Amino acid sequence: MQKIACYIILCLLLGNVAAIAQDTSLLNMLNNSENAADRAHIVTGTFKATQLVNMPTVESPGKQNLQFLIMHRFGKLNQGAYELFGLDNASIRFGLDYGITDRLSVGVGRSSVDKAFDGNIKYKLLRQTEGAGAIPVSISLYELVTHYTQRYTDKSFLNTRYRTSYTSQLLIARKFSRNLSLQVAPSWTHYNLVATPQDKNDLFAISAGGRMKFTKRMSFTAEYSYLLDNQVVSTKVYNSLSMGVDIETGGHVFQLVFTNSNGMIGPYYLSKTNGSWGKGDIFFGFNISRNFNFRK
Image: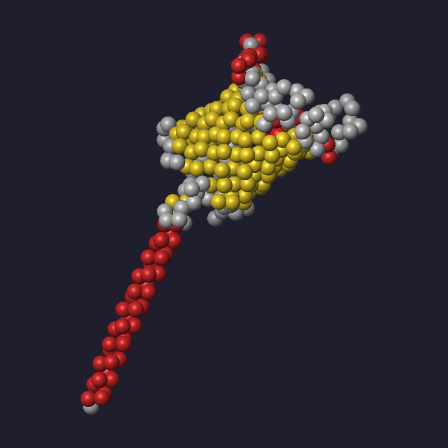
């Protein structure tokens, strides 16, 4: 009888130990889950649009989201009252961007400048996170192919191959607070055809910009692109300087912008900016984007 009682007591003790171990294991799992959640807290809304002004941002449409983007630039302000300070003239780009996943998006566009078509792909390599083991920056890779279709009298050498250029940008951004975000973007552009043998086919530039929020729905944006020296020698080009004001209105983001670049995609604002702020070669315009969600 004593042996049976001892056996029962031993079983109860082992059962309690197992239950305690199980509870401890469960608590550890919960703690690990909470820690993982802290580590995986993704910082969102680094920028409110996929374009800062001309430069793309790390942002892209979410999964199964379609963005319709209109980029519009009037003529130069220094054209005077006869041209209504540039409002009589305009260039425009329409674009569609679609989120395949939350990290990967593709897009196409058409610009009136040189009647250029473009296609792009953007992939988020890293996303900024908060908590233990946080990632301090967001990084996106942006690839752009541009092909212009402007007609010229002499078409002997301007076939499809020579009308095409390629741009790669590494977009590195950080959201410092709910009001301030900054981005830097080293860029490489390759032209299949350049104006003279002295001009480089491969051009390198670096862009920097940021967004400062000053009300709940409005923010100030600015960007600057520096083209390394002695790459374009056949014509005078300037570094692109742009600034604007973003207005969030529900599903729209409306951007009022001022820039010395007439072109609105990579090869044009990075290496073909022919306007000077000092001479009043300033283009007023706007960007407006609208998102359509196809996810249930």
